[in-house]
Amino acid sequence: MPSKFVECYDKYIDFCYEIFDRILLKGYIPLVQRENGMVYFLREFRGMKCISTEALKNLTKGFIQRVEKYAEENSIPVVTVKRGESKLGIAERYDTGGEGVVCIIKSKEYGSSFSSYEPKKAKDKNYRMICRALSKVNHYYFYIRDEEVGGLNYIKICSYFPFNVEIYVNGHNWLEMQLKRKGIGYVKEDNCILEVDDVSALQRMCSRLNDDPLWGFADRWIYKFVPILGREREAGYYYRYFIAQVEYSHNIVVKDSRILDVLFQNMIDQFRRIGKPDSISQIFERRIRSNYRGVFQSNIHMEREHPCIKSWYKKCYVKQYNKKGKILRTETCINNTYDIGIKKSIINLGYIGKVSHGINRRYLDSQVGIEDRFLARHNLAELSKTEQTGDKRITRDTDRRRKDNGGH
Image 1: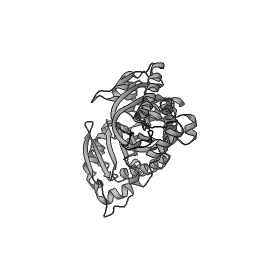
Image 2: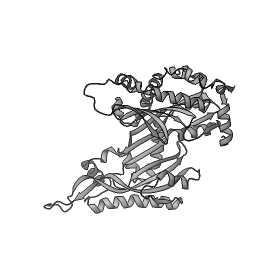
Image 3: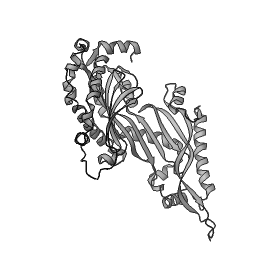
Image 4: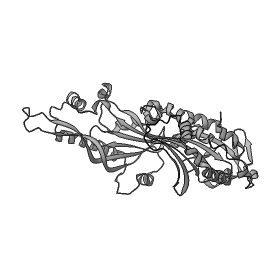
């Protein structure tokens, strides 16, 4: 059922869709995150009697050799990033559009690992003290075009044991792959769908993005590089994934860019009422208590030279912006799932989507008071006429864009 906002301005809207946009995960092998678990694993499964500094270095060497061998066998470039250089920009230079690892980027960053040292009065020559350490070490970014989630997405792996990982997936990349598989024509530009032949199919696909393809993507690639053997995984030494950040976007594709320019300008003029405590409480469905700690504000700032409305609740926020005059995007960004009462495990992704859907909807509905006279004043009614063929809606403006972009 469409929101009140969509119902109110339906005559200016071509179509809508909702999907996860940016998804950032952290991956760990839980059983080796503490000193005693790490010692048990290396002794029982790797046969290490003495877990010395040299032994830990050998684990790193083994990982690097595995990566370099894979890169050599598959003719994949390994690039060391320079300070201030865009990793995505490097990956795009090597991207040929084929599936697989596009390039491997090496970057020095802070990462969690273990350090080992010998006590002064140790009676056992193999005895070592093990403690957690935060060190600046090499991390490897694997930029990948995947058969399931598309590209360019990346997996970052720390080169030091216990090889903690970070996974980035863009929901629009996944959606594009599904449209291609089904043979549905579309126009995609700047990380959004501007036109599609089958709107209903698009919306059904968006609702199917859950944790399953993310698990598959991570497991399919991580174990190619991290030296965790099959028997070790069977014993419980496998990666589990947790949500670090997720963005869920509600996208309204308008019939003409001038309509959106006028509509969004008036939203900016009216935004101040959204920032009141009772409004934020209703939008996020969270009670604001007297002991509340955290950011609590609404503001307007420039994002890529365009104004953006942003409303905060703790470390979460909703942002709304005019995406190049083509889409009104309302996006909930969750930086800490506990702020909305949800645990971080990736299995909760579907529930986070439902909560974010509600936040986006209430944010839009709070702006229904923007009256049609602001649009009528600019004589835009004629520009919103569409032609409809089956489930395909073509506007004069989007039809022109399709010709300009070549379509799909």
